[in-house]
Length: 318
Length: 119
Image 1 (tube, rainbow over the protein chains, first blue to last red):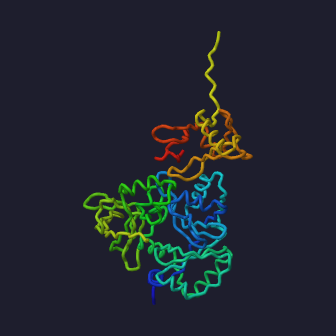
Image 2 (image 1 turned 60 degrees about the horizontal axis):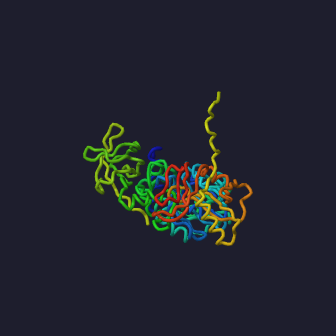
Image 3 (image 1 turned 135 degrees about the horizontal axis):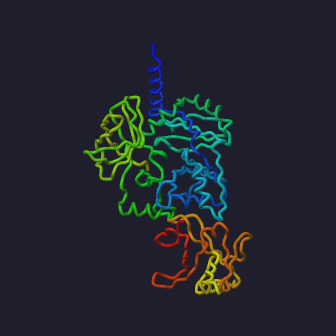
């Protein structure tokens, strides 16, 4: 008879398998959702953030970074253009801060921001076969439900935003299509393994978008946005001081975030995220100094042990 | 006995230099609208976050603050006024190029091209 621990680890392995090799269903309702209305909403967001949003077509979505005037990350948004409004996905912790940031920079423009996070739900379908899944299945969606291709784990992925009252029936409906429900711990392990930065760990006012590997979310030709001068200077003069990397260690342990990454006796970086994989390995994300050679092996001193970790370079998704 | 009183500080306002006012009037006359109002304001954007706005309008907005100096009417919306109080609008035709310049005591940093600022 299988013990509870064995059953649990089998379930985790099954979830991990679904998310990394097939299709998984994830409740992402904690992601912030802000609705921007008004004739000037797109122009304002285009003026304030890094990506070129001005020519975005209705029904399309683009990621963009809100930066401070010092070029530091306020948040990374995914902006979905609808016929008469924009829906911006924020990090879970920043929805209020983003709304306040927009309000601060709104003067005579026709723009209003409404936080619709609590009145909607958000279900994600993600995995290498998600695109195949989307082509194969017809899900009966009401007009109020919005589907956006967000690739939130840097692989095919869709987010489905629906009124909160429809969450349970939509979840059941999606389950019948073969998408395996996975829990937050599995999503976190895959996020880290795939090098996806999140707010509070790899993103925030301590970092600029270039060191966070978000260069592909920046337009260098659209003109000014808040922080543009600093970001352009860092890029032009190659002044970015550190880079985001993945790490893998051969130990079934979550290593404390904030631990130093050590190379040849010198501290060369910091661990920002950590998780265990069903394989028994540990994975992490961290920032290392620019001078650290690619694919180096570093030591992490934590929990009274030394973990030997290999750096894996993160190639930004274009 | 006479007591010396400290000079009373002028309330914070937006000033325009005589030279700048002259150039605004010149533009207005060229546009065939000598009685025009100069809208001074701020909008979000630009490298430093806040960008100066200058516009010629027929009439001030209902809630605008209106200032008259050197025979020119200026208007500013209330939110922009918070960031512009104490500013003097100058006109420069020096070696660095011609144009209007904002001398804004609220600006902590200004971007390289001088069109945006932060507070």
